[in-house]
View 1 (tube, rainbow, N blue to C red):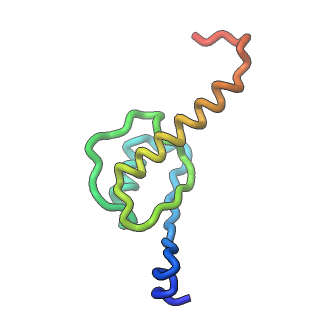
View 2: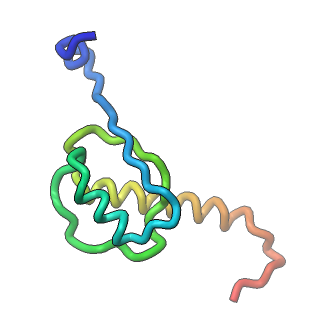
Length: 93
């Protein structure tokens, strides 16, 4: 397909961005800053453990703060799902 056909059909090219497990929030932010897929800057460092490692797809020019928000929302969903399936007889300290 040619570029004009793609634009007319309204399809947006998605770019993969992978965050492997084990990276700190600081390392994730560094990868975001280095990538030319994203735009804008980040106002603050996300708290440790608030970003879900995964592969995400974004169109070029997505603001970096929206990437962080999506990763935080994904982490909240995963934790909520896991917490809802926990054994209620296990004590949490």
